[in-house]
Structures are given as C-alpha cells and as structure tokens.
Amino acid sequence: MSSKPDHTSAAIAAWEELVSENGRALIARVEALEVPNPSDIQRFRARWPVDVVNAALELVRARRRARAKFDRADQLWCDRAGVEQATDQSVADWKARRFAEYGVESMLDLCCGIGADAMSLAQVASVEAVDRDPLRCWMTARNAGCPVTVGDVTERSVDGRFIHVDPARREESSGRRSWNPEHHQPPWSQLTHLLEGSAGAACKLGPGIPLPLDGAPSGTEYEFIQSGGRLVQAVLWTGALAPVPGTRRATLLPEGRSVCGPPGMVPVSPETPEPGDWLVEARPALERAELIAHQLTERPDVCELAPGLGLMISKTPVDDPWFLDWRIEAVLPLRERPLKRWLREHDAGEVVVRTRGGQIDVDAWSRSLRGAGSTRWVVFGLRLGSTTRAIVAHSAD
Image 1 (spheres, rainbow, N blue to C red):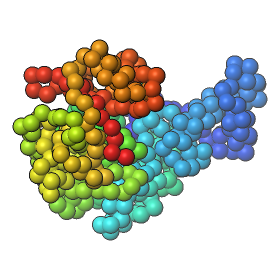
Image 2: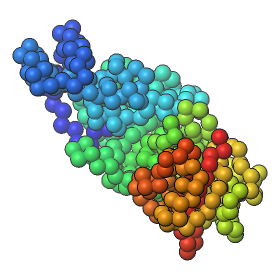
Image 3: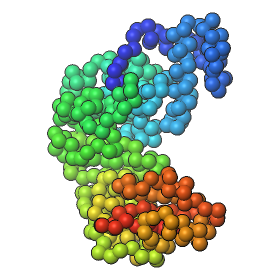
Image 4: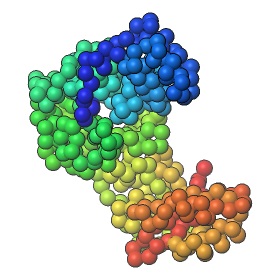
C-alpha cells in the first residue's frame, strides 16, 4: 500500500498507453537497452509523450528488480516502490495455501499494492482488492485479474468476510521503514477493528515487530516466515484461520517446512564452551518465534550460551534442519592479535565473522582476519556474561 498516493488520472493514462501496441513497442525498445542514456531517452521522447516514456522507463526498471521475487516478473505491471513493498511470490503462495486449506471462497485483499498477494490469493478464492492509490489498483487489476476498489480501507466494512491486509511500513518519499505498528499506514489502532470484524484474517507485518501486539484479537497466531535464508515476514493470523490460539509458528521457504507451538525459553548453560563442543545456531524464523525450546524437547542437554543469545551449546550436534551445527575448534579472547595468530597457524583463508548484540564490526573484522591459506573459518564474537570471547568453528557439513 502506498503511504502517500499522488497518482493522478493523467499518470494512469500514461500507463494505460503502455498496454497498447504502440506502448508495447516502446517497452520493447527500453528493454533492449541495459541502461538507457540521455540520448536514448531523448529519442524516445521525440516519438512518444514524455509521461509515457517515463512510465516505460519505470516499468522496465521495476520488472528487472522484481525478478528476485517473481517467476514471471517480465509480465508484471509495477513500479519500483511497489516491488520493494511487495510480498515475494513464494511467501504469497504459502499464505494463500492456508486460505485454501480452510475452505475460504471469498475474501478482501486490503492495501493490495501492485497485487503480489492478490495474484496468489486469486488462485484459491474470489478476491476483491482495495487500495487508496488509483495506480496501484490499476496494477493489481492487471496483475491479479480481480475486481479492485480505490478507497481508504479503514472506512471499509468487512462484514464478517475473510481478509488479507498489508499496511505500509515504508514511507515512499523517503524510503524510511518503521517497526512501530502505530506508524504504519494505516496505523495498528485503526486496523484492529478490521481484524475483529472479519471471519479470519492474515495481517502482514515486519519480522522485527514487537510482540505481543496490544489490542490484537483473542485467538491470534503469529507466524514468522524465512525465505532463502532471510527472515522476510511476520503474519498475524486470526479467527477461523488461527485454529490453535496463542501459538507461534516458524516457516522455512522454499522447503515448506513449518513448526507450531507455544513460545518458551531454553535453559542457560552453566558451562563455558570448549574445543570439541558444538555451537548450535537456530534458524532466524525459529528464534524469532521463540520456538527453540519447543524444537529441542528431546534434547534437554542443549542449553543456551547466554540468556536470549539464540546460540546454544551441546556435546553432540543436533542434526536438525531448524539448526546449524558448528564444531568449536578454539575459544579465544575477543582480540584481533591472538585471533589472527591462531588463524594463521591453522591455514586460514576466508574468515566469516558473526556476532550478536553488535559486539564487533563484522565486516571490518572479516577483512582484517582473512589469511592467505585455504581453510574457511567462522568466528563468533560474543559476550558471555561479563567476558567477551571469540569462538572459532567449522560447519558440520
């Protein structure tokens, strides 16, 4: 959803022209150029109206950016800001699957943007999309092939229907992103009545959103979705779409792996790590959902290094796809000189530095510690209680 829609009927008319045979010819010419230079643009403007040329340039740039998110990016109608805010196709497909599993036949997609979620939802249900930006509504209509309405979603009565809602977390004019839900558009305090009035809802949130959310409907489930190794989205599920109230869910895509349970804490290890131990790192979605303890119910020997650190210690690897196992080879003071000496003595080449809590500058340390050898090492720079330590490790793979 656009945070400050300013698209006029003239702007939409320019995009409409791109759909025509004449406009598609312009798109093809722009696509043939890696980066149009000023003379190229001047030549285009001699044949096509300026606003049509500007729209074509924007479309081609946006489609190229969309290739990281969509299989058929070159067929999308989109702009760059819309692509940046859009849900990845794999994530949208995953959410749509839940609507299908619970037999949803008709629903609203509120704050639809360019229609990324609507495209997936329309494959499983009859969808009406709503956004206050007329151009984004035009894009959704073309991308998802569903009815669209231009309007303020907070003034819309959901009438007990199922809904998907995606409040804007980014201010388009500045690009600034807010993690405070009350700073979203529309703000959280105005979204709650939509959620409460629905039969069931999926509310897209940023993965760093503070939980639990005040005012969330009773019977809420929070799902954290990780895609391609990155934590990309949190989803608040309500009503009939949240059959196990009070639970959290972690999901890995594209694997389609998902676990659900109550949040819990991992006991803290009374011991300090030693060479030969295993450092166990939870996947971001599992950690953010606070489901590490849930996934380790059969491994009471695995304990956290420090409260809230998200890194555990064990005498044996966990060997579970929700965790990364690192064999500890050395535990050293968190100082560059002794660390460099140890790495040099152990054939260090590439050195990947990780940390928690911003203890060190990982990029600077990675450059500084890199050696001339052939062995790849991973160094965790951590605060453990009142001391800091460098844990040098190898992956179990």
